[in-house]
Image (cartoon, rainbow, N blue to C red; front, side, top):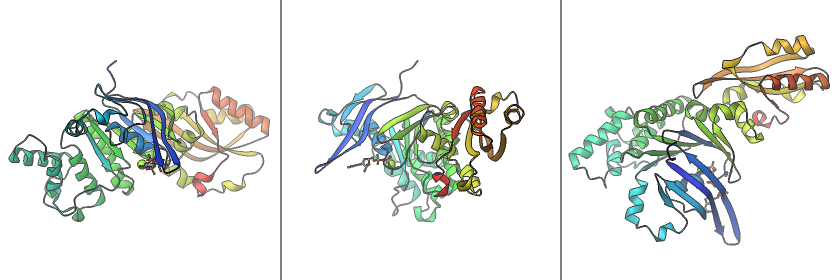
Length: 354
Ligand SMILES: Nc1ncnc2c1ncn2[C@@H]1O[C@H](COP(=O)(O)OP(=O)(O)OP(=O)(O)O)[C@@H](O)[C@H]1O
Ligand SMILES: [Mg+2]
């Protein structure tokens, strides 16, 4: 197999502030292949931004090595590489952020041209390139507009055009859709997916929104307290989440949470239990829910159900309340698990009661 385009090996990042020491990233090893859209999810403070900042050496690692396209960087690297060299390397990596970071005093096209000021192209060629980039993100007719005259989604498109100005192989998106409404979020995500295909662009998508990852990523890593606690192909992580936090993220789709809020889940009877079921919807051979009642006399009420296509494969999610004696309920859960359904008992309903 080809070498990964990004290879982070045993990365730690420690910040010292006076007497306080913050271990923002702890011994993270991750490989990202060319053409991946790699989602990194985790709650605030998990270390996501710090980790990706090591990729373009905006943040030097305290330990470990960063290998990009075969070139290795490490903690003392800054002493060995000239600023010029570093700048050149960084041009291979575009970044977009939550707050667009556009120059508000200049037009859209000037924002893109600004990123081309080190390029070897002459002025005409730069202008042509900037217009091509704006065309690529669907904004050619707004080249002379100013950022304040654009919607949030359009401003993010400008920042994407700017990030792509030097033909990077890698794009890092750090919460780039967090300030956008759902419709603009989906449009930007679809644009990223499109660019990934058209340009063979490798994308790292940092987000706390699982829906974003589900829409476009092919792989996912979950971060907590500076570590990657789970990772893998999107569908696998969804079908077989190993960690509690991952299960929370998997079940935490906005649609599911909105629906579950409508039920009085605080007051389930003693013989009732709320379960999240996740299964490979391309491989359903019998109606498992009907079997539960037939075989075990466990009643199942469905609260929420959905099938989504994740990285090309259908994955089903159900939230159900089962009702029956404790031993029957346990048998039902075993039965489901034997039928390759991932069952999570939802004891902590905070995610949708907040
Ligand atoms: N320059 C810094 N100096 C000191 N501490 C820092 C610095 N940058 C980050 N940290 C700390 O490192 C930890 C991880 O921060 P980081 O910004 O990487 O998290 P994150 O997962 O990106 O969070 P968010 O989702 O809020 O963006 C936090 O505890 C943060 O306070
Ligand atoms: Mg961050």
